[in-house]
Image (tube, rainbow, N blue to C red; front, side, top):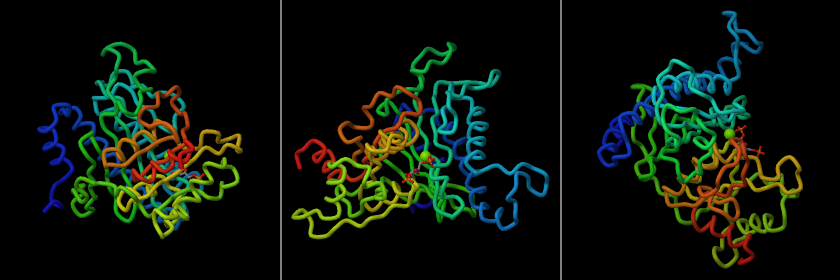
Length: 337
Ligand code: AHM
Ligand code: MG
């Protein structure tokens, strides 16, 4: 009867297992869950808004119609700033660290997020999501926040996860003790445990990459993609190609079915020498999840979770998924395969 455990009940059970988890952390997650429910409600209405012709800057009530990614960013910043347990936030949509407004209660956690990943897909009704990452502050309380409180390597995350706004809305997250998935039951408005203890298969059957960039890649990257099309003796069958263009959705599918997602460096494209995806709000949280599920995430050489960030919005090549598939990438880049 796993379906009947709510995310809140799961959190409470989890608190008993791990002294790390506290009531403050539960408050943070509860506020995050409420924010995601609000975003999910708006995402579900996105098509309707178009049908009703709210295409200009203002709707019939004279209110400004904001793009959904801006809306999601505002919801998260507004709500999370008030949960009382954060000392700073950082969003993919904001250039700088977001401080908690003066006068609001603060705490020892840092919250980093991509409010609506894959938002270029909104207009065509393709799945999108919110990715998040949580760290503890390093500097003493009651002192000004430092960039080093936010620029921590992924291995220091105390929790990470995503909300997926798809055919149903899901929360998949980890506090470093495995990965669990919850599905929003719209009838009761609760996330219920639907995917306990997610494990990614050791080897997958799917590769996900934007192959349109093939001519931008270096020879080793091309060899990697050729390998998944024709794994030779290791498997008689080619991998299937699946690419939604919405990281959180591509990642979620591969997490469940097994496979590898790749966004390599585009060495011949001066705009993307380190790929497109961001270390702090995309790669690191998904890397924590995949490792907790038994998979791997690397930049082609290094473990994503070991990379020391230098800038908030730094980009990183990403190879993430089933262990054997990611190991193959490392071997090819190292000239061993
Ligand atoms: P976004 O955060 O602005 O939505 O951009 C990230 C998205 C990812 O969801 C997706 O994997 C990638 O961009 C797709 O990029 P491309 O169109 O170059 O394949
Ligand atoms: Mg994104």
